Picture 1 (cartoon, rainbow, N blue to C red):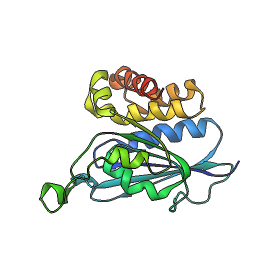
Picture 2: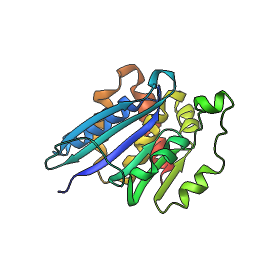
Picture 3: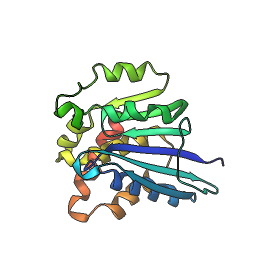
Picture 4: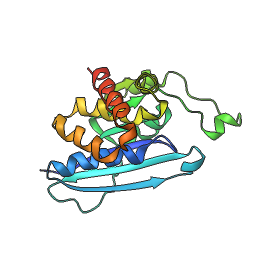
Length: 192
């Protein structure tokens, strides 16, 4: 199998670490060689966080270059637009419609771009945009939007359901497991 690449992007505090662990767990259970690498911006101050996940028969480097990603999963709309150049032609873009103002917008030096979802849809990629924040709140906490998006990814890929459930059980603390399972199911439903 040729190597496949998935980028998980967002801003600090949105849970990209858990998302990459869930995905990595599923891929390892499928028997793939998996490499994961994180690139932090000012993640603790709301800056960009990018995680590269590469998998296949043999993976030598986790780094994903522009035009290489089979999929980008974005926890925030502007981050989806920023990482669009990394997607392959016809790649999958799964994004939350949540908007978090970056520092230039907060300070008044810039404006948050308008109509981003429409612009992304016109970019020639397979776009799935969901209100992950609202779905996470329905599950019980706004912090589960990362798991909502993993549910969307699960619906868009053919990895067995039981592997996702096992990954949730292995990666999520027991006291938050049911809530995250609900968030995951809401994401799967939203993707259809």
